[in-house]
Length: 111
Image 1 (tube, rainbow, N blue to C red):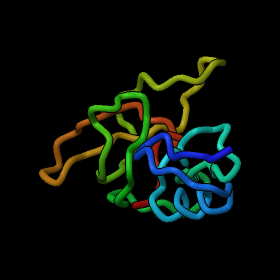
Image 2: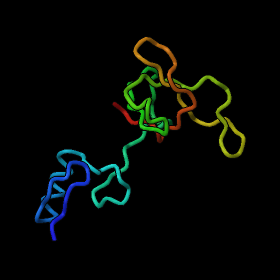
Image 3: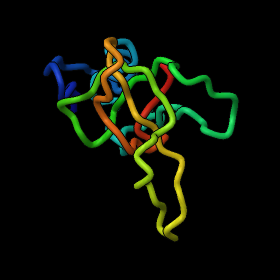
Image 4: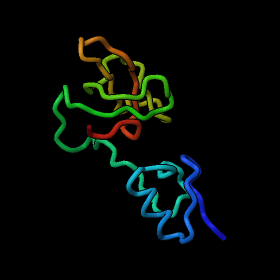
């Protein structure tokens, strides 16, 4: 039974050929159940972090996905489940305007 790429529709006679195609094109690699899926490496807030680091935002606000400068969030409303200040970021565009605030570390990766 042939396999096919759900993104572009290309058909493959062997699963290994489909896997190779998906690795090269990144088609369907974002699906958690994909056998070759890897979670993106998040920006670890506990390691050395320089404000202004370029990051790729891939969080829940899909219309804002893209590359931004990450800075510590300054809104003072970022609370974790226990009501303590959490580690969050604000993302600024190339003009320095805050585009997204209260961003979780798992929603950004180094660009």
